[in-house]
Image 1 (cartoon, rainbow, N blue to C red):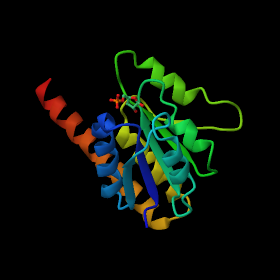
Image 2 (cartoon, protein in one colour):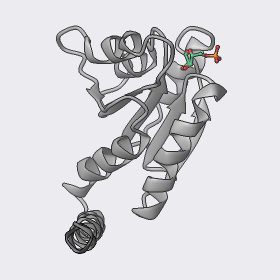
Image 3 (cartoon, rainbow, N blue to C red):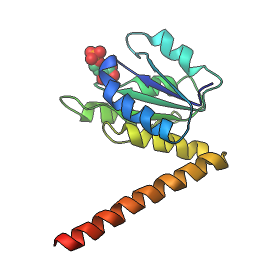
Length: 157
Ligand code: RP5
């Protein structure tokens, strides 16, 4: 049973979903990926939002990006919205962040599928020692990479 559900508004959001899924897989978090559109298949969105086994929803959408908000309207689970880049960019960012009082959506940056996955893991890590441990390892790998980069840079300059 998946803990995290990744929903894309369209197949054209697939690259962002891939980064998100890869990061969740690396962190050992079970997940499922599907497409459901707030405007084109609203009933499907409602169906997924009602799934009891899901702990965190990640919704990726561009343009007017109603998807994360539409999911949040039908669940008390945390919803993370990922604005997908396009011609304008601010359209999706504002649609996802400017939710009305009482119905929050946590937003990550434009196309930041990996950050949505890490945030989902951090939410789950509050109740799971195992997930928290994997997040600590992930941070330590990042630290190691920056330290190695700093070391090589100091040799070059
Ligand atoms: C949004 O409209 C989708 O999330 C996608 O980012 C954008 C364009 O969709 P397509 O016309 O490519 O299907 O709902």
